[in-house]
Amino acid sequence: MTEFVIKLPNWLVFLVLLTGVILGHPLRYGAFLFLVPYLVWLYSLWHQSHIRIPANANVSTKKPLAAIVFAGTYMLIASRFFYAIMPYAIPFHLLAMYCIFYVLYYVAKSLRTADLGREAKFEDSFALFFGLWFFPIGVWFIQKKAQKVMTKTDQK
Image 1 (cartoon, rainbow, N blue to C red):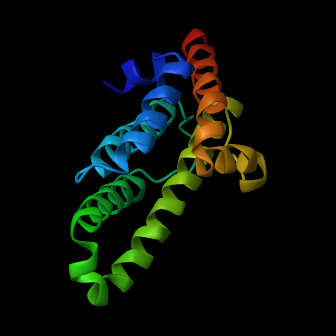
Image 2 (image 1 turned 180 degrees about the vertical axis):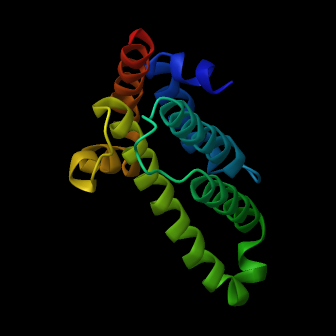
């Protein structure tokens, strides 16, 4: 499935995520329309780039997956019950924010490591990190970059 998501045209991924944001606001369970495709896209980027990381790169595998699961679960629960759990949700909210930033950092680093063929530093993946963070514009370029990296590493 992750390979299928990476092979999708960048305009289609952009359109699906943007449609989820636009239609998600007025609907009761609208967060599902954006969060699920966005987290699946992030997971696909991470998984496909992680497969192509050289063996000598020191990159963790369990932390990003746990961060994606926690942040996704929290955001889906909080989007439905936020006002009921607000007094108790602040620590979880901060932890979910940390997890999202960690996932964005790790996906950017993994994609750049797969591209360079060596372990990337934050300076190397700075632009990818901000592209993931500001997703409406970044999706367009990052999807194209991911496809280029995947085909380049597959041809080696």
